[in-house]
Length: 124
Length: 124
DNA sequence: CAGGATCCTTTACGATACTG
DNA sequence: CAGTATCGTAAAGGATCCTG
Image 1 (cartoon, rainbow over the protein chains, first blue to last red):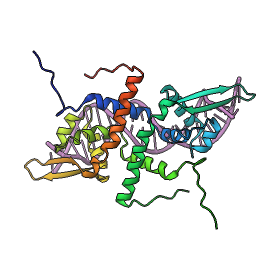
Image 2 (image 1 turned 90 degrees about the vertical axis):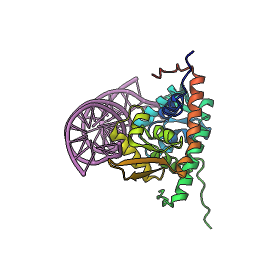
Image 3 (image 1 turned 60 degrees about the horizontal axis):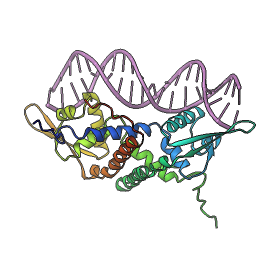
Image 4 (image 1 turned 180 degrees about the vertical axis):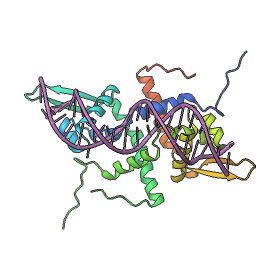
């Protein structure tokens, strides 16, 4: 009987690599963390609200990132029938599960700065 | 006395955003997670070992990613004086602290697949 | 063996203008 | 308001060849 080879030595768990690739693909781009962080506050925000909140983003990028995130079930887009159309974006329950990931990343970043005395860049 | 404004409502903690940006910058690129995951097994690996382990990477990219990671204190490069030079790469203690981040990311990716029955792509 | 140099393709990102 | 269209730049990534 042929024994399943365990390639933990030379080829570490491909499933894991795949999973990481998935997550990072979903969170790829320059703005997703920022948008997600904003929406995680729990409020429903409109397109222009987000343009204001997410500092520096343009409407094109915002639009694209929001579409990606909707496709990936991280946020929900709701069109209200008001006179000039209004659209609300809010995070999904599933989207909220990313908070553990984001927390770890933020924590590590903070520790990193502390460790290497990287001077805190100006914020405004 | 002027009270420090807390902008947790409209401008969520910039420090946090900064920290996230830092981390993601350090882990940016297509290969760092993969390389890191490989080196986290704890063995010292040579350049060519890594080319073999990190499936699909070319020498140029590997070289560049390794340099980045060394600059960021995640790995250590050691040159041995053998006849044709040999170089060993190994993860640092600091590099190992990334495991919590990577674990969360991997975990989330696995859950994501499970939730949405995303068909597991062929591995080989 | 460990990489650097070169060249080329692709993707990401951004500014500006425009539409229902 | 909520985007899309168009255009242009820059960065990322890859293939191939070359060197100490």
